[in-house]
Length: 149
Image (cartoon, rainbow, N blue to C red):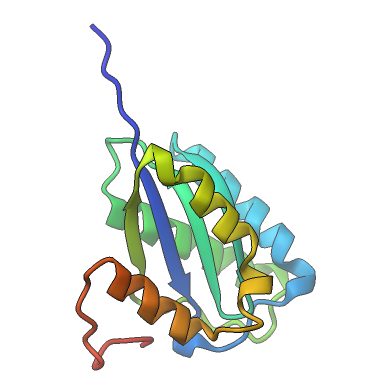
């Protein structure tokens, strides 16, 4: 008997203090490294992109992996790599929290397009504005005490 599943997650996480420490020149190397982390977790990364202070991912996470563990590992392994690579001199680490939103199969292509256009999108909106809107669109109450910490 086979089991079937489709578990798409739109994941957003940002640098500590939302500081602009992801150098665009080396962001592709970072995204490729994260792609490898996801693959090693028997999961699939459909899209990754971001700007200097945050990253968006659309991933299908293997059902045996809790989402919080998945994001923790992506952040932990990528943070270590970023510090050791020498590419991201100002990077101090990822913020503790993250945003994760379930995505239906019908929304998949729209979210991929949204993630691809991050640089263009952020000519008009700051990360803070974008993140607030994402949370509010999902009906998530924002606790200002922890927002962008």
